[in-house]
Length: 283
Image 1: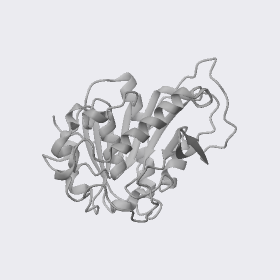
Image 2: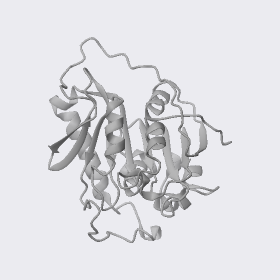
Image 3: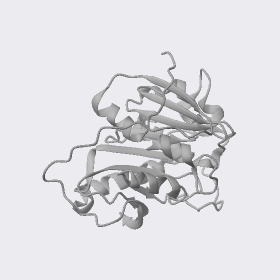
C-alpha cells in the first residue's frame, strides 16, 4: 500500500479511528525539532449514569498493588469513565521511567497504568533472559512474563468494581518502550500466542521489533498502531525502516513518526531531547 504523509495523529485519534473508521491506511511522517500542532478530536460523550469517583488532580501519580504487581498510575482526575492506557517499560527499566509522558497523557484525560515487570531494575542491570541483540534466539516464550503481567493488570482492573466503573472499556490502549514496545505489538496479535483481546490501539515507542519481524505476525495486527522512532536510535530504529522493516510489515491502520534528534532513551525521563514532540504526537 502506498505510503502517505500525515500531519498529526495521537492515541486519541487512533482510538477515534478504531471506533469510527475501520478502513486501513498507512502513514509515514518524519518530524524535525520544530513543534508539531495537534488537531482537535471530538470529545467522548459520557452516559448519564457514569460513575464519578476520582478526587485526584489531572496528572497526579499514585501506586497500587494489583494481584501482586506493583503498579504506578497517573490519574486523569476526570469525573465519570475515562479511557485507559497500560504502559510497559523497557528491559531493566521501571514503570515510572517516562513520567514526562504518562503524566501529560493523564492531564489529557487518560488513566495510565504501568506495572513494574519481573525484569524491572530501574536501570540497574539484572541479567538477560535471552540475548537482546540476537532476535533469532527468540520465540513466543521469550519474556512471556510480560504478556502475563500486562494481562493480569487488564483483567484485575476489569474485575475490581472500584476501577472497573472508572474505565471506558471501549477505549483501552497499550503503550510500551523498547522491550515494552515489543510487548505492546505482540499483545495485539504481533505474536499470536500473546494476543489479549480488549485493546483498541497501540503506541509503540522505539520498539525492539526485530523478533516480531523474523518470527511474529505483524501483518495480523488489526488495531490502529502508531510507532515512534528516533533517527539517532541505533538499537530499535534499524529494524523499523525499509521495505522489509517492522513498519512495512505491520497490518491495518499504521503510522510511523521519526524524530530526527532522538536516541533510544529519548522516551524516558533520562533524555529530554524530543519530549515536546513525543508528547504532542502521543496524545
